[in-house]
Amino acid sequence: MTRLISWNVNGLRAAEKKGFLDFIAREQADFFCLQEVKAIEGQLPPTLREVPGYHFYINSAERKGYSGTAVYARNEPLSVAYGLGDDAFDSEGRTLILEYEDFVLYNIYYPNGSSRPERLQYKLDFYEVFHNHALNYLAAGKRIIVCGDFNTAHQEIDLARPKENETSSGFLPVERSFLDRFVASGFVDTFRQFESGGGFYSWWDMKTRARERNIGWRIDYFFVSQDLAPKLTGARLMMDEPGSDHCPVVLEIDL
Image (tube, rainbow, N blue to C red; front, side):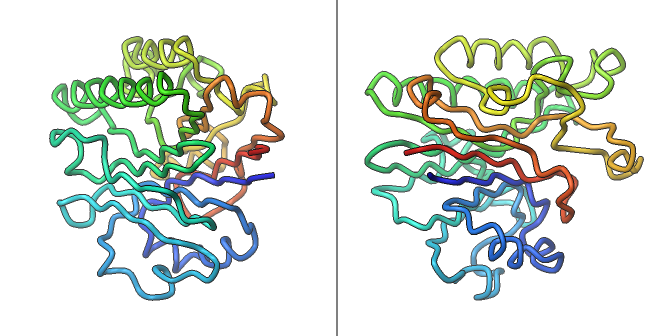
């Protein structure tokens, strides 16, 4: 069984101070896929760059202290792509793609569209570029795992207050329709293969202490291509894990 954990850590250096290395030692996953690492490699201490038993890859944003993705992988991939190959979207360090013989792993920190209309359009354009990229792999016969902070709740069940957020970025019809099309094109929301109920979230607003009341959003996902769906053995949210305004998302799969 292969175990993968995805987590928006809201700053990797901050996460280390909150016990991130203990988390790695305890969980012993085959992959730790991180978003919003907010650092370049040279800013990280050796304790984070050289975790025993793991290969470390980081894609940092050009803007300091912003965005960025990282992966700790037990097994070295055949190749690593730092971005989607589009300059308009690769400067923010949002994508790491690890290719193995049996599958391709996308770790992505999708843009947030809430700050202004231009960023919403940037988010939607990013979705399209990513989708086309993934479809090319799919057409080539590759099995695909996609994880990360999608910054969108897909269905009403995926957030605590859907009616109040119908006009909020992260739950806009145009954002949700992308996830509809993504699923229709051959991808499976792994968590929903094991849990059909509500009340399960991966992000909470810290300013309003929403986590204490579980007023959250499920915006962090593992999707797999349909050919991997029969190999799923587990998927869950680690809602009690502190250290960030997001919680870790877990996937277990026979690869």
